[in-house]
Length: 126
Image (cartoon, rainbow, N blue to C red; front, side, top):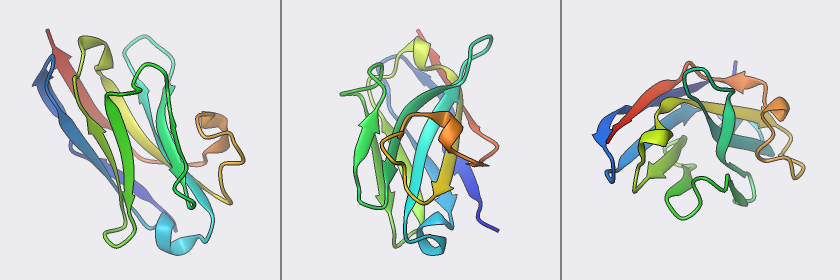
């Protein structure tokens, strides 16, 4: 069964950095896939952060462009999210999600993803 598992969350002050990791078997299980990061803050709906696919195409939410970087390491079977210049509004539970077959241009549409992790908490203090 294909799974994803997040790690790397924590508490950081505004302006700081964190790296999230998503260990996954998606890269070895599927020749085509879509994989990304989503987040949910308390009292808010879950939203997309960044996503990529088997071709390495990248997509970012406007709120994180220029600050966050998504990357995949197919040797380590790990998806990363590098978060710089963190803001208090980045505080949320961050989820890794994946789907087989590619993104079909819907990289940031969470309805396209059926494989979800348990999440890792990121807290940014001012």
